[in-house]
Length: 185
View 1 (cartoon, rainbow, N blue to C red):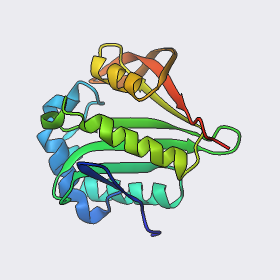
View 2 (view 1 turned 90 degrees about the horizontal axis):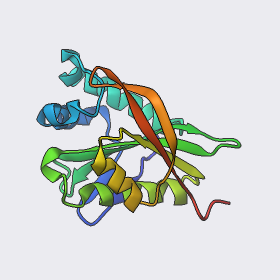
View 3 (view 1 turned 180 degrees about the vertical axis):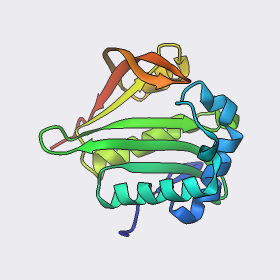
């Protein structure tokens, strides 16, 4: 495995976790099951097992090694707790040079500026170090917090995708947004 990036912010550390960190990830989702269920697909009981997270974190490492995805976990500064997730998925090079952004925050840290701090650092890394031209992020119209944070980060609305993703067991419309790297070469 090549050395993965470590991005430090004022209050967090963004890392691509390895399978040895499976319990940290399992605990994040266990602590936030009810909170995140309104924004994510339905999950079965296997989702909260350590073995699933060992496999998922290995997949995250493989995606990073192949430069097809950067799935960061935002940890507290002593690296004992996952505070949020910041994923850059579906990286396409060539004439596109773009990816999709996905994110979540521990409910106990919502409304305290952590998500902005995490996403801002991750986006800067993807633009400056990975040299992407475009990052796309989509949110459900009812998710005003996502709308607000994406606006603050400089994402622009591009349209609406009807029945875009099956979230919480129901096909949901999504607002499509993107942010362009102003320094892309």
